[in-house]
Amino acid sequence: MSAAAPVSVVTGANSGIGRATAIHLAQAGHTVYGTVRSTARAGKLLDAAEAAGVGVELVELDIASDESVADGFAGILRLAGRVDHLVNNAGVGGNGAVEETSSERFLDVMNVDLCGATRCAQAVLPQMRERGSGTIVNITSIAGRIGAIAQAPYVAAKWALEGVSEQLALELAAFGVRVAVVEPGITKSSIFGKNTDAPNATGAYGPQYERMLQMYAAGYLHATDAIEVAKVIRHAIETDDPKLRYQVSWGGPEITAGRAAMTDEEWVALGRIEELDDYIAAFRDAFGIDIST
Image 1 (cartoon, rainbow, N blue to C red):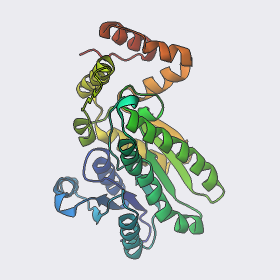
Image 2 (cartoon, rainbow, N blue to C red):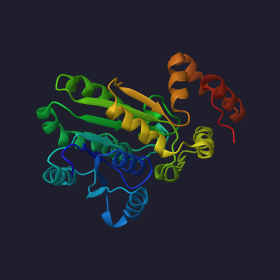
Image 3 (tube, rainbow, N blue to C red):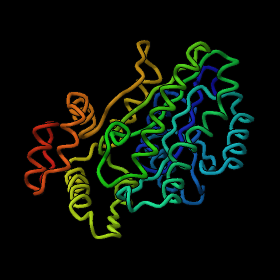
Image 4 (cartoon, helix red, strand yellow):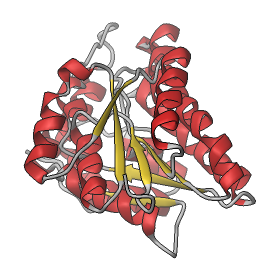
């Protein structure tokens, strides 16, 4: 390992944004440690790295476990001596109307998407603070900026990670450690295909789940390649003119900007629209993207 090579850790590196980021950073000269829940199932990552002519060091780690994170990062620090950049990418989705989502379901998603990121940050921050440099990139979502319909557990976790990231940026500024929040819209990823359940346990929320699935169907047609997110992550790490937040992927910049331009009352009014076609038209007017299929 070159002494000059930055050491970067990418969580959830076996697929989607994580895999694209691990390979992209390795191609840029980083020494990359990719965390996976099972090294035995990391064949796609290893094959993609080989095809790209780079190496990615595998670390078996479950971000949902305090012990696993502590052990995994202790091993990385023993091998590499430091971590310069942490990309908190690993996460899970979670659909459900608020009324139909159990406390256990909320907590399960929060444990991965919020607590998983904070566990990993806590594991690398002491040596970053001591060194006076480093970057933590937290991957949230446009669902961390809007109340995405019928996705209560995911929205809760991603909004929480947005808030913690903003706080963390303030807390770490004096130590020379940067925080960046990357907010993807719809991106080609394994989480996309796994997150299409529409429980509708009460039978009352059929139209809400229909609109959620309509967004997924449109997103499936237009989803941005994960490499575009990887490029933004690399920019956030390497730029001399950093920002706190970056939007990327299909619908990300448009929905974020559109929601910021709306009043809260205008946002709530979208929920009163009865017909799906009318909702699609109103969504297009508000955000400038077409979710028809």
